[in-house]
Image 1 (cartoon, one colour):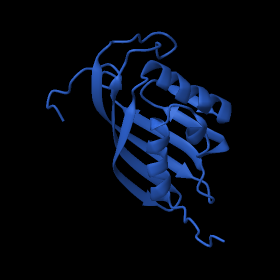
Image 2 (cartoon, one colour; image 1 turned 180 degrees about the vertical axis):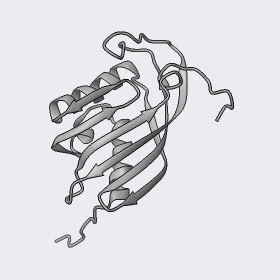
Image 3 (tube, rainbow, N blue to C red; image 1 turned 90 degrees about the vertical axis):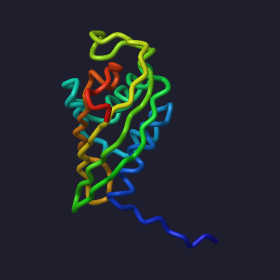
Image 4 (cartoon, rainbow, N blue to C red; image 1 turned 30 degrees about the vertical axis):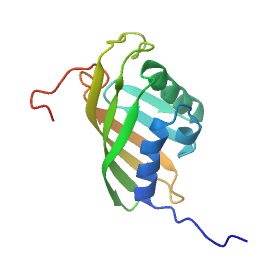
Length: 147
């Protein structure tokens, strides 16, 4: 019998959120969220609530950027929240984003992202506020300083 237990922490949820973005399907991503969770993609002005719309959000991004990869750069946790700093990479080669208003650029990108995840007492994500520069990610522009 295996008596090991896994301790869930806010920092661990931040790491799992990044890993779930790297998954080609939505299950790991949606599984991190409370049933009534809200996701705010501040950059595109998109608000999604509930598992069905969270699944759609992940699927739309992955369809637009099939090779998308996120790497955790840093995470900061407190009681009931974690802030994630990450690097996103990929090439916008697929389906349009932003209700069809942003079409594939065919350009590779590397951009910084920050997300504020509020957590339930059982470490489910209750809300996510995600921030990034859409001219860089997924648009493919380069930053003036290259950082």
